[in-house]
Length: 278
Image (tube, rainbow, N blue to C red; front, side, top):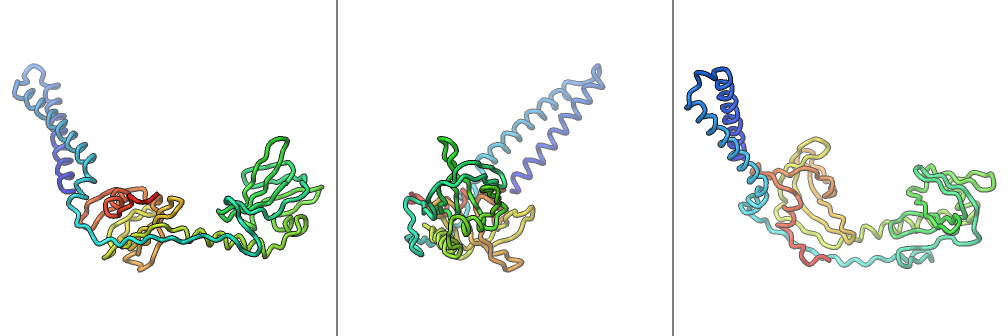
């Protein structure tokens, strides 16, 4: 970090000198000496060298940081949690459970971002824990997601308007408690999706920029899930509060205890053996 600052200082210095010598040459065209022209050339060469050094440091910074870093003990755990979707006589096949299927019902379904008019053929629940209507319109079969049971989705059927719950209860004749319990069960299975975890001993201190605020954290655990979702379990030093932090939420480089900065993904890849992750 100090070397980068020093290089930037020299860059500013030589660039300033180049401008000064250029002004001297411009305003004193007749009396300017070869010595000033020589200094001007030296200054621009020095500026180019500084720019090249900064570029090299930027390219190889992460490698240098990792090379000088002391590796902590990293305990790897392999989790083989099997998901079970059978619940309340419902069964999921190939990621889909059919909750209702019967005579097609012609309706207009207006969601927050999408509107469909056609025949409702199925109500299904996928392994993401979200309900979907399968709607046929001519030869097309489309699906509309119902992210929340209490969403503002509006369904018009024979001049009568329904929300998601009232349609399920009054028209599809489904027991709301049963289908929502099944959905909760499916969502809980997602939490069993953790495939690998890496525990740092001792926890690694670093500063992370979150919500435009740089704060000090202790990284205790790195988790990788079957769907390639990755998160850190970290503790805020000042507030003594634990946070589950998705890797994708870290937009800038982390700052280690010695002040060196590095990309979080390169840091994790260097410390954690993920070569056998499929």
